[in-house]
Length: 117
Image 1 (cartoon, rainbow, N blue to C red):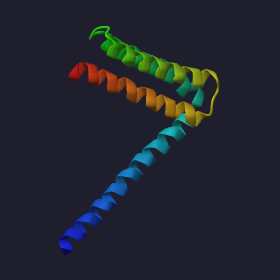
Image 2 (image 1 turned 90 degrees about the vertical axis):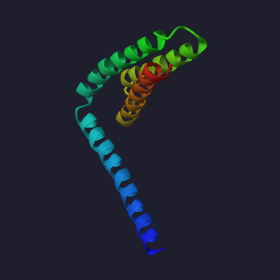
Image 3 (image 1 turned 180 degrees about the vertical axis):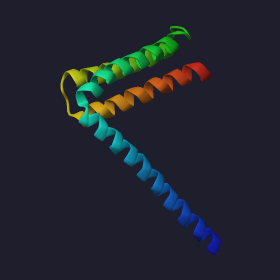
Image 4 (image 1 turned 45 degrees about the vertical axis):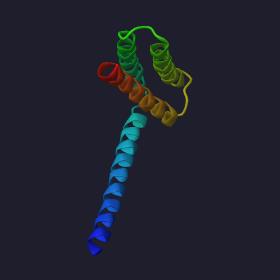
C-alpha cells in the first residue's frame, strides 16, 4: 500500500511538471512572438496560409463529398480568422492563439486525410 501511495505521488508531480513545461513553452513562445510582432505576424500569414493550402490539398485529394467539404470549410475559416485578426490589429495574444489553433487544425486534417481516409 505504501508503494501505491508513492507511485501516485510521483505521477502527480510528473503531471504537474509536464503542465508547467507546456505553459513555460507557451509563454516563452508568446513572448518572442510579442516582442517581434510585426515580423512574426508577417511570417504567420505566409506560414499558416501555406500550411492551410497543403491541408486543403490533402482534403480535396480524397474527393469532394460532404465530409471533405466540411473539413475544407473548417480549414479555410481557421486561416481566414488568423489573417483577419492580424489585419484587424487584434490583441497579440488573440492572434497568437488563433495561429496555434489554425496550425493544429491544418496538421490534424493533413494527418487525418493521409493516414485514415
